[in-house]
Every structure is written in structure tokens, then in C-alpha cells.
Length: 152
Image (cartoon, rainbow, N blue to C red; front, side, top):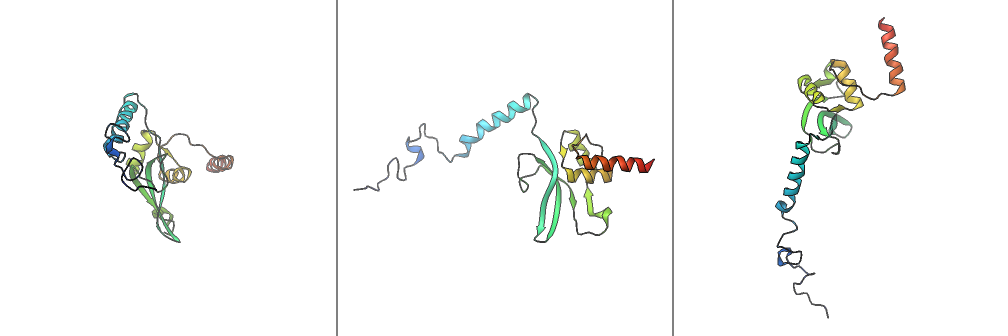
């Protein structure tokens, strides 16, 4: 015969001592403290999180609209961002108004060590933002050489 009385396996509270020291498994304070300590340790040693400037898709189906965001590299595309630094609307016909960037904030994040994605890098070339060397494909390098040759 099976008893449904509250016991260690059937609906017992986590505070009853089954898990020890009266800590509730769902108590947010129980998990928040070690995380804060780790963050402080990282800041003390000068370790920073990897930040990227990349696009976040917004809009509706068949009508995309993108935000250019500073976001931690580990976060998903639709994850929490640090700051919105611009927008990109591919359906605007005028190429000059298609991309809107807060150049001073983009430059700030790049100075802090943020790395732009390939697409954002192409936007930065158009607005003349100074950034570090970004990995490019061989084909892109060949196109860049052709452009330089045409300018001369």
C-alpha cells in the first residue's frame, strides 16, 4: 500500500531538512551571492566579458528590421543586450538612410574591446568608424585590393 502523506519524496518542503540547513532550492538569494563574488573577482583581475556588436532581428514575418546592439558573445541572438547602438532597415530604398548608427557609442564600445560581426563591420566601413583588424575571407581581401587599385 502506498501512502500519499507528505514525506521526503511526496511534497515535503525543501526547508524541512531534506536538503539540509533549511535552504529553499528556489530561494534566489541562495544562488545570487556566489555569482556576485565571481563577478567581483573577475573585475579585480581585469577580466572582462567578450562583447560583440551584432544584429538582433525584430519586425514581423517577411518584414525584417534589425537593431545593432552591443551584446555579450555568449548570449543568444534574441538575448539580453547591453545597449542599442543603431538600426538597420533593409526595406528602405535609399542606402544612406538604411543604416542609422550612434557613431560615438559604437566607437566607445570598440575602444572597450567589442568586436563587430561581419555585417556590422560592413556598416562601419560606410560611416568611417575606426576599428581593429577583423578576420576577412580571401575573396573580401581581393575585393579590397581591387578597390585600392581603382582609387590610384
